[in-house]
Amino acid sequence: MKTLPHPPIDKEPAPKVPFVRRAFVSEELPDFPGMVITGHARLNDGETVLKLTLVNEWGEDDERSFLAWVPEHTLQTEDAGAVYHYWESLPGGRDYQLGYMHQWAANRRLGRDDQHNVKWEIFRVLDFRVRKSETELLVHWQGYREEESSWVSEWDLDQQSPEAVTFFWKHHMKSDQVLSRERRRRR
Image (cartoon, rainbow, N blue to C red; front, side, top):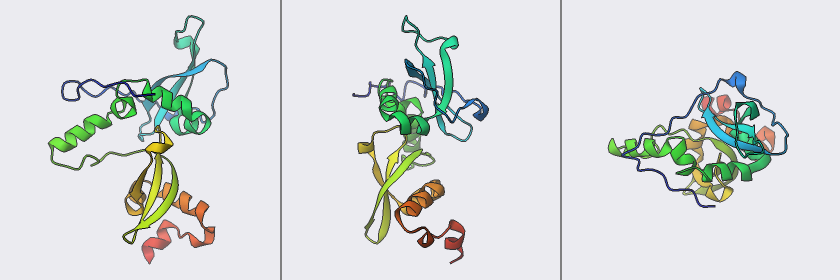
């Protein structure tokens, strides 16, 4: 499915992304036939959550059909196709809806790198390679299809998400070979 085009970034403000308190988020997915994703929000720490509702017989959702807010990564693990379809059905897709395109444009206007202060959510690290004596990790980004994964320097990724880097190495090497961040810093 192709993502719908987005409104002009220079003429339209970034879409308002509501905030949800963590207390209202379920780590477990409800299991109901007819359950659909009908919205998205952020937690205070920046994590994306998705709104699950039951669609009534008229194809509409209302407050009575609300089931739960769930972390996007939880739903992507269980039903990645539903997550991709949701974002691709919105104008501009995930990049536009979460304000990334507006952040990139603002960074360009200020003469900065597009990615300056943009915090991406990592779904999982898939692989590693060494190029020009630098280790790079292949990152599958949260909310995006696996074919949209990209190579990122291990150092850059470790700055943003040390737990994702440590998790990857613990599962790809013998655990006694992986140094904790504390032990690496002391060396």
